[in-house]
Each structure stands twice: as C-alpha cells, then as structure tokens.
Image 1 (cartoon, rainbow, N blue to C red):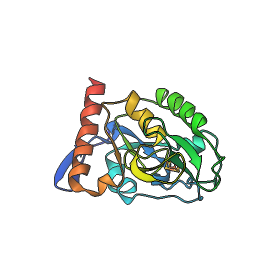
Image 2 (image 1 turned 120 degrees about the horizontal axis):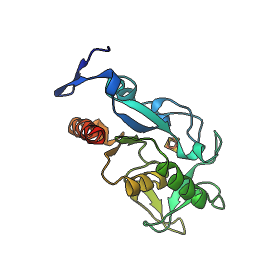
Image 3 (image 1 turned 90 degrees about the horizontal axis):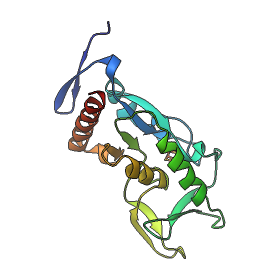
Length: 190
Ligand code: SF4
C-alpha cells in the first residue's frame, strides 16, 4: 500500500494519498510541451514541482488537438464578446473560428472525470479571462475576452474550479483552487 504524504503548501498543510490524487486538466504548454504557435512552451514550475504531488494532470492543447501544426500562425479574438471569431494576427483571412468551436464542444464533452483545470492565460483558445479582444475592423482592443475552449469548459462544467496561471501567482488564489479541487474530487467519489 502506498503511504499518504504530508505536503506543505503556502500557509497550509495537506495529507495526500498518492493513489487518489485528483485529475485536473492543464494546458499542455504549461507542462512544458512545445505546442505553442511559435514552437515554444511556458512551463510552470508550480505545476511541474510542488503541485505534482497534489494532482495528476490531463494535458490538453485545443489548437494542436484540432489539427493545427507547430509552428503555426498566431491567432486572436475579434468581434462580438459573446461569440468572438478567431482570426490570424498577420493574415486576417485566416479564420479558425468554426473549427475551434466545433473541436471545443466535442472535446470538452468527451473529457474523463476531472476535478478542475489550470489553463494558459491570454490565449484565444485557453484564456479564462481578460483575453485581448479586437473590434471587427481590428482598430480597437479590450481585455474582456475569454478563450473559446475555456468558454466551452465553463459552459459545460460551471461548477468545476478553473484558473489561469497568472491568477495562481497569488497565494490565496492557490489555496482556494487546491481546496475547491479537493472538494470537487471528494463529492465526485461520494
Ligand atoms: S495556450 Fe492552449 S492552445 Fe495555446 S499552446 Fe497552450 S495549450 Fe495549446
């Protein structure tokens, strides 16, 4: 039998059974997978080190998952905040909107039983909040957008904790996220 492990996190201590760690979705680029449009990744030490004792990870990348290559043209959100389009940054004739919405709907529906998600901030696919959103003519920009995949996740799983890595820089946000994931995991096992 695998022994429980006592883990010190920020201001609190947890006892974790390695055999019963909650499974959370994570943007693959945060786990060091080189899937970004520029062929790079954004590894997050918090996930790769401290939290690897707390959680098991289900890596996902909506853009490569829907069949886009690496590297690939960068895209951005444009138009209506409720249903933005996903358009090329350099080449505005590039439009992956419908393919990304379709992929997100199907992929989120078919995920395994998960207890939360950590997604990449600022991404037109994964960004949870404050993603750049350009007006239809590209002239104006706000930070009021949500990535297409993250939006679909929140629509299908409104009660599951979801956070981006920027928010997790704050100790209280980290603590709340861990507690909510473990609470979701416990209720799912009841
Ligand atoms: S932000 Fe999301 S879509 Fe973009 S590379 Fe990372 S996992 Fe893929």
